[in-house]
Amino acid sequence: MRKAIAVLALAASAPLVASAVQELPGQPDASRVTAGTYTADPSHALIEWEVDHFGFNDYFGLFGDVAGTLTIDPANLGAAKVDVTIPVSKVVTASAGLTDHLLRAGKDGGKPDFFGPNPADARFVSTAVKVNGTEAEVTGNLTLNGVTRPVTLEAEFVGAGTNPMNKKATVGFHGETEIKRSDFGIAYALPMVSDEVELDISIAFEKN
Image (cartoon, rainbow, N blue to C red):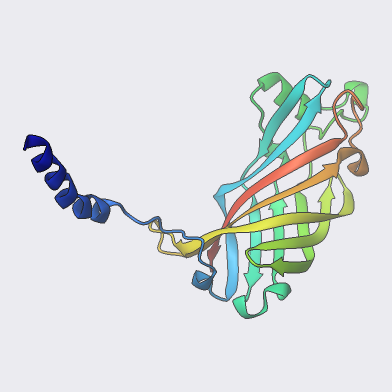
C-alpha cells in the first residue's frame, strides 16, 4: 500500500517538475534567425588550435576576443557574409613558457619562431557560402602572419534566440577547418611540431 501511494505521489508531482525546467534561450531552430547584421560577441567567441607535438600527443591553445560581423538573410543564406578579426597577440596556452615562446622576439634580431611580440591581427573574410540544411561550407580568405590564403570552414548552426542578459537577438555557430602553418610563414620545428593545425571555432553573434 505504501509503495502504491509513493508511486501515485511521484506521478502527481511529475508535471510540476517538468514545468520547473526552463527552456534554454538559444534553440536549434533556424526559424528564429532574422535578417540583418550581427556583431560577434567577443566574450563568447573562441578559436581553439591544435597541433601534434613530437608524435607523442596533441597540444592545444586558444584565441579569444574575436571581433567581426555576420550579415545573414534566412531567405537567401547563400549570400551570407562573415568578416572576423582574431587578435593573435592574445593567444593563450596552459603553459606560460609556451605562450611566451609564441610571442617572443627572434633571437639576436632574427625572425621570431612563431608570431613575435607584436603580431598583427588575423582576419577571415568569406567569399562564398554553400548551405546544406543546418550546415554550411564557408569559403574565404584568411590573413595570418602577413600572408593571405584561401580557407574553407565547415560550419554548423547551433542555436538562435534572445540573450536574456542584454535582450539581443543572438545566433551561434560551431566551425572547423585545418590549415598548414607553413603556408603562412610559420615553419619553426617542422616536422616535429605538425604543420597541420586544426582549428575549432565556437562563436556567437548578436544582432545590431
